[in-house]
Amino acid sequence: MVDEIPSRKKESNNEVSDEDISDLLYVLRMKFGEVPQSVIDRIKSIKRLSTIDRLILVAANVSTFNDFLIELNAGEEKFKMVGDKFNPLRGGSKW
Image 1 (cartoon, rainbow, N blue to C red):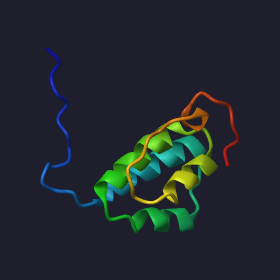
Image 2 (cartoon, rainbow, N blue to C red):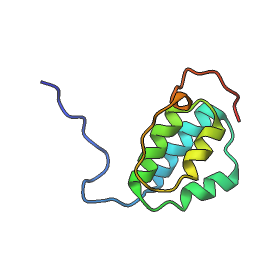
Image 3 (cartoon, rainbow, N blue to C red):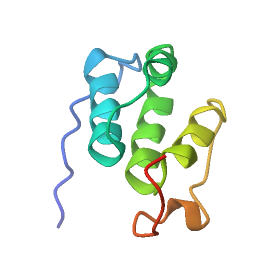
Image 4 (tube, rainbow, N blue to C red):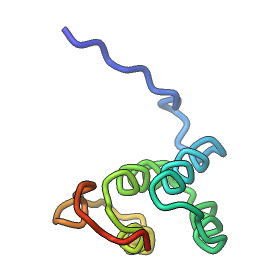
């Protein structure tokens, strides 16, 4: 039997915290280096926790910063991560 990994987020709390924003920015900085202030401001304006969670997954799986920006600007609707751009092993430029 596999134990469920406890979530650091409360089930009833769907608000974006500073920690959620920091997690996303950390992944972006680790993969792509410095993040432009305009992107940081855009991320900080997101109000839905599900969107931040989606963007953390996207950031971890895209191979270019431009592909991340496309997803960031796609809005807060449901999504599927399909296609070669979500292959983290695919070669690509930093930006």
